[in-house]
Image (cartoon, rainbow, N blue to C red; front, side, top):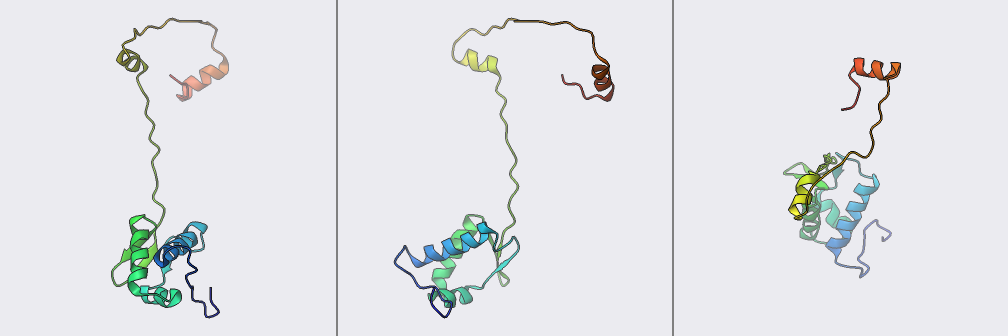
Amino acid sequence: MSMAGTVVADGGGSLHQRILTDISEKITSGAWAPGHRIPFEHELSVQYNCSRMTVNKALSQLAKAGLIERRRRSGSFVRRPQSQAAVLEIHDIRMEVEALGLPYRYERVARHKRRSSAEDRALLELGLAGP
């Protein structure tokens, strides 16, 4: 970083890559919160002492990665994190065993009978009992 607040390339990769890294670090560190307006391209080109096209290339890659949202005539903004749904696959063990060409069988190893307790009955009345 120079005295005037501009960033000068130090030979560590292309300038657009440095811009991309700097902005993504600000986003992932929380320095720029979701909804924060990123400086305009011409402001970043002055800050990084480069062409607007170099800044545009970095911002385009950030938008493609889903870190920012670009709005025509409004600027670029940090995107809100996308919620991710957990996907859980429950495989049918019988189908998997048979797909391997093996016979599927089962046997009961143990069975315990007992009288239900007051707690068991209370859970059943509330509908909280498991299957």
